Length: 115
Image 1 (cartoon, helix red, strand yellow):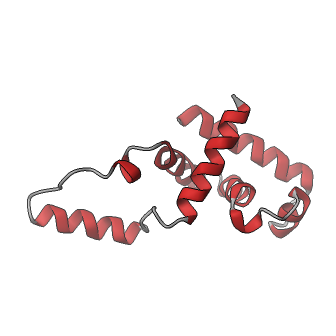
Image 2 (cartoon, one colour):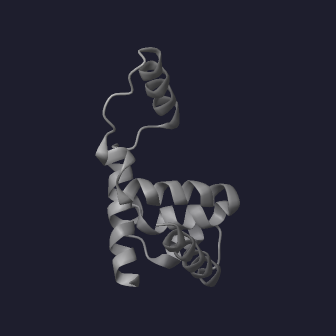
Image 3 (tube, rainbow, N blue to C red):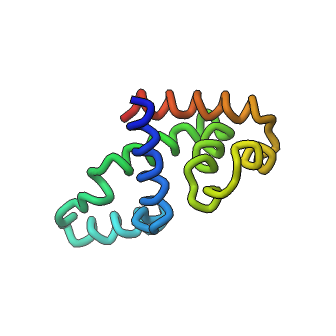
């Protein structure tokens, strides 16, 4: 299951970084504009009904409850940090390697419980 979660987290990071996730302001504007016409139209399966959006929702919840864990999970799976070692990511977040790894495991557990 851990390998599957890692695969899903890599897919989630690519999905977020591809720009398929609308910023919150755009989502609200889209929602309000659709509402004024009285028609929300078909739901977009690649935004509202995919595992990536479920993971993003879990990460956003995590960001409220445990912001450092959310930063760690984003750093771990971001393509921007792909060439960095975990130690480098930890240093960038001003964490020890052990603390980074502990936050990573906790974040993965949190996400796994919600998807």
